[in-house]
Image (cartoon, rainbow, N blue to C red; front, top):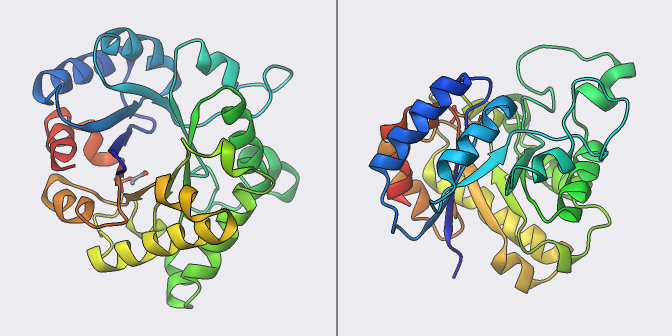
Length: 263
Ligand code: PEP
């Protein structure tokens, strides 16, 4: 039986003071005894404060991205070792915003390797996280154009295969996949529940084919894309949806606590 997981991705929102206030309100509203794993992914600067405030709770602290080297001349980046110092448990990798698939921004070929994640750099990040016993939350999902072209499964399969290349099943039991259709992120348009379940089931089946049934049964697969308290219960009650990756709605502590309670 997989425990549900709800992760809040605050993106580039909340100063340290705002983060502290949001966490304090959230802790007051959420049921500490609920059987659901909760992760809050604040901006890097707020991680130490959020960690301090959550120290005696069941709520974990995550990060929104990571570089794959432990240290070095990589201006502006943060390493797994630095996150480990603050007991970060989960790290989002391959989000459509960091893959550079969001909006129309074109990334020059020469900087693509650093500034827009590719399947190869996502794979390096996953390896670096697993080495430090942190759980990657791998985001996969198609753009609207890819969906309309009937390429949803092909895109997701290739993202999964690229990100998990060379990894052994024994390393992947804490691995989390988030199905995040790019067209549903921050748009208010939620993927139809039956369709979200269908794609999450496809992801589980692919993991079974790439590895084995045991891993496919254990890996948690989340849905992300305009999750709110009004649609969370229906989404999270699907057999292959093990919770959610929540962006905008996680910024409102009361709304986020209702989403967590739906799981
Ligand atoms: C996200 O950014 O991962 C996300 C799911 O955002 P939102 O919930 O705002 O659509």
